[in-house]
Amino acid sequence: MLKRNNGFFRKTFAIFMSDLSQRSVYIFLLIPLTLLLLYKEKGTVPPAVLSDGISQDFFRLFMGDYRIIPEMSYQPPFAWILLNAYIAFIVGGFPFGSMETAIITKFRSRVSWWISKCFSLLFIIALSHAAIFCTVVLTDISELKAAFFGFDKNSLAAILLPFAVSTACSFVQSLMNLYLKPVFGYVLVVSMQIASTFIHSPILFAGYSQLNRTVLSNPSGITLRLGFTVPAIITLLCMALGAFMSCCIEILGDRSRK
Image (cartoon, rainbow, N blue to C red; front, side, top):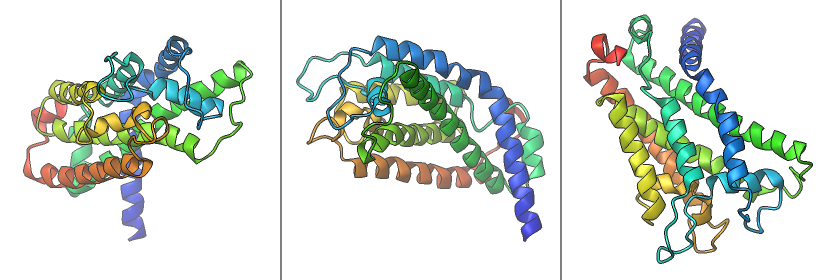
């Protein structure tokens, strides 16, 4: 049993390194993109519940819709849209890659392959948000801001909620890529994200990472419990559906080279 687990972990690590090698440059480019968006949104005033520099900057990046209520005039939240669209671009044609045919044949089951891919995708999204986080921290330190002063559970929620929603969106995109060409999966996810910026509906979970719509900014907004629970459920459902679909469709040959 231990030998079998070690083999699974080695294959999972190999898959992650292969996926990372195809995306490392794009993850690195999140650094200048984050700096540019921080400069663009520097005039945004975060809510009083966020008193530390890090969560304030995360609010500026992931504030999303400027409207507290739908009746207000709509302004496209370019920073939120651009960050989410870029992360969807990093996901790209996941779970397929340039070496997928050789990788799949090494696994005894497609379910094991899909589970390894799920771990790999989770790490890729975590690294993407870590790049944003590190950029924010280093920016605050260089500008002599009180980066960690007043850091509390609200600050932690402001940082982790965008990650939770990005993870759910990325798993939805990967699930669609099993059936559709990657460009269609990308367009559908980004369209859902853009639609969530002007439609106030709990059905569009992609909008949960718009921090201006949460209780951090509006007492009647999306609760943090709902904001974390729904993306977690969607992520788990995508993992389960992907395991089932990977056994029912052709994923070798031409599909692995898409």
